[in-house]
Length: 157
Image 1 (cartoon, rainbow, N blue to C red):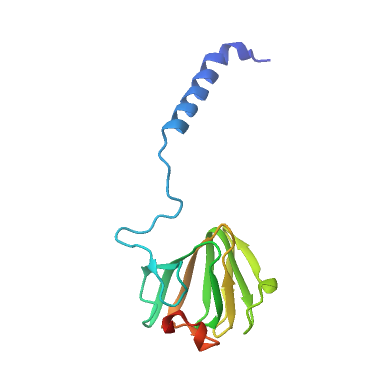
Image 2: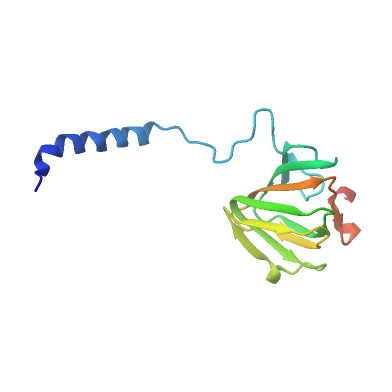
């Protein structure tokens, strides 16, 4: 049987070292953007829907990756995209409902870590929950956004 009394100084030192490191560590942005990349209002979304292009050019042929940020309460009316998309939720709660009529009772919640595949031309809608959402969209362009009702398109307002 070992004697724990001889290990007390080591155990005390280890706890002190961990506590010191925890207090001095700088906060880290959980999903930092690459240097020179910034969020900007996405013209395809209502105010509060921002985009940062990480790779490629969504409007051109080829692979693209974007980050999209929704402020709490943002409502995106029914629309579609011509390509398959992969959505990866990074923070907050991202929601999606399927169909050509906005119905908040049909929204499904997806939390950080969730991955969702949306087939091409699927009509869908979103509404941000109280915690907003940050998610990554990956697809093969060119992409576009077509609203079911033209009057819901923020580019026409």
